[in-house]
Image 1: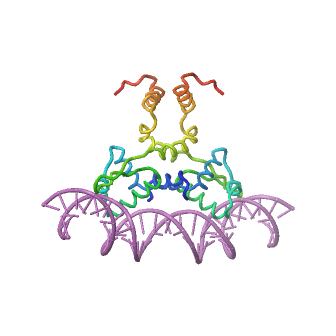
Image 2 (image 1 turned 60 degrees about the vertical axis):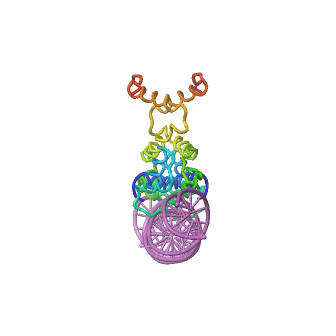
Image 3 (image 1 turned 135 degrees about the vertical axis):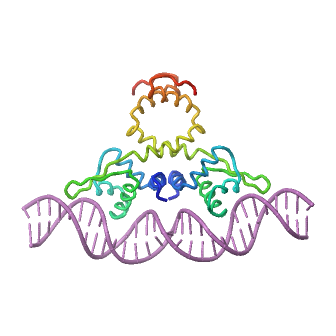
Length: 113
Length: 113
DNA sequence: GCATTATTAAACTCATTAGTTAATTAACCT
DNA sequence: AGGTTAATTAACTAATGAGTTTAATAATGC
């Protein structure tokens, strides 16, 4: 499927790609730097980056012959938002947390609507 | 891949399966009930349920000839946990939230370690 | 026992995915 | 211009995924 959420989850459904995102959370990196820890060819890593880019999870700039990759968390936020709907099923303190978030956002206690 | 997190994200990377989970969040349902809203054959839905079950996102019991499906949120909690590591990148109030969670858990303000 | 209902299994098709190696593009440097 | 480094494209293979239709299993109710 090609809807954004499906593309995001599909991109995250691979340990190599999750490891790439973890690496990028520590700072931008070139393709070679990203590929170094993995026991696979450079084109294979390049393809993974393409998947991540298509999902909007990374962006790439150009500096000379290097193409540094940069983490983008918008899709992660969306994925988190989808999962959050189920949070009440496992997180007992969710309701209190939810109130707290509203307080942070509005500056006032929730009216318990 | 067959690691739990990959199976969870792969299961979530399909709109039909996400819709099934949404349906089950309102209560247990049989295969026919689950399949009703979808424009696809029953075996197709049955396969989706198999994927969800393999990922641990649902369990099934047996009552006569019905196999009611039940939502299990353990894997969602794990997926949420993975994404949470990136939360600081988009959620400005994350640090304060984090402190708040610690307070809920320990009953005391964080020592700012 | 037999028909009915609920669900799964088998066998198949078509598209996509993850990986490979070899070749190509792009930019740098002397 | 020619050589080197960085990265992608092309062409291919093998495995997986999502869907189909037809057939089989399992339990119920006469």
